[in-house]
Image (cartoon, rainbow, N blue to C red; front, side, top):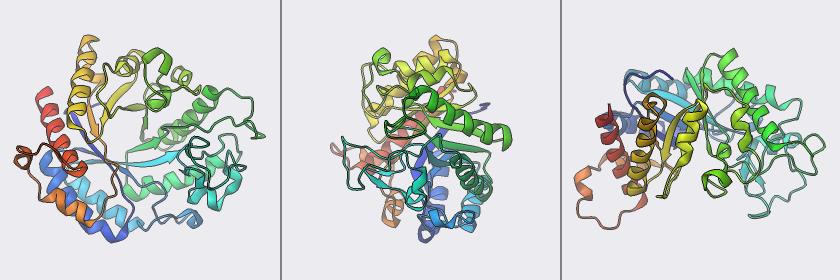
Length: 345
């Protein structure tokens, strides 16, 4: 990843045709003035697919994507579509539109649809199914072409369903090998065949026992060894949303040869601490270029009111607020992190 200015990134989920005008205004009136130069747009299956219309789970059209991409390009923002791969194929036992339309791809078809955590967090597709890759690649290609993207984010976070004992193809196999297979298959298609840069979440590559993370921010499931089995030109987005005593995964990713972008959420103090510590670790290793910026993630449900609220905010409105609502603090966090990134270079 070659950058001449800090990566000031913002992430959100979006997949609504009806909100496209509001979203474009949000880009022009909030993201651009704030200095955001990377937009990670998580659309997943909330897109009107032409190659496989049966998996369409939203209303965002190809024309919508072209319009959003044009606004970003004109304003100097790199747009990176995000499509959740392997895990997060639904919530709890409920499958998403891919597994509803193609249950043959389900790693755990025996799990009831109404199952809850801790029985299941969310479903995965089977990495060894002979037809799943070509199917997913066709969906990705549509998104790359619609957004005219030169980068693609494959998700890959919070995978807890893999090598299931009842899967006839995966049972008994090493989870790290299976995880690495998916990453390598995606890399081959995206980087080598499509020529786009590949991004992914880094949590499944963090060894919880070694690095001290819990089962969400790190791996206790058996996938972390895949870190040594995948290409080093994948950009890792390493998320930590709470203030921790330390964040050793930043150093670990850099030592392994990856470019790593720390990812925060709405909690301002936690985000500042994570940024400062990530910057320190990169400096200590003489590898500041391997930590080129930060991404502020948003996990609220964006609607017209949310976009409008962001467009009317200003940093001064927080001076007397002791308790901030999540959306308000998200704006504050974005403002503070961008300011820190601008002063870093």
